[in-house]
Length: 118
Image (cartoon, rainbow, N blue to C red; front, side):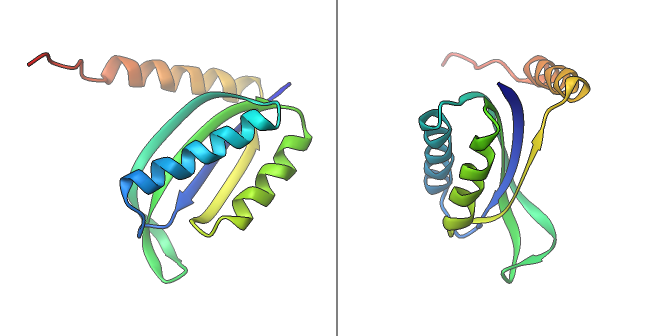
């Protein structure tokens, strides 16, 4: 099984709930295609470098997953068919990329503020 990382941008006209629903849909499709989702991140609403479909912002999400090589072509079809997705990019994670991703995740956990009980 190969490891992959996909970053995709959802249209900003969605609510937070709708954006989360789209991410859940893609996670489910990965699982249906015999893949395994390792990590999901929401980077929030960000300004785009250039307008896409006359929009200047978008919801950014990152998915790390494992699967066989044919999973990518099937996921790309799914991203292209979903009108909520403005752009996406999938890369295969090599050894150094995987190490860097693990360091990034551990830094994020250290920097995360603990929840306070009220």
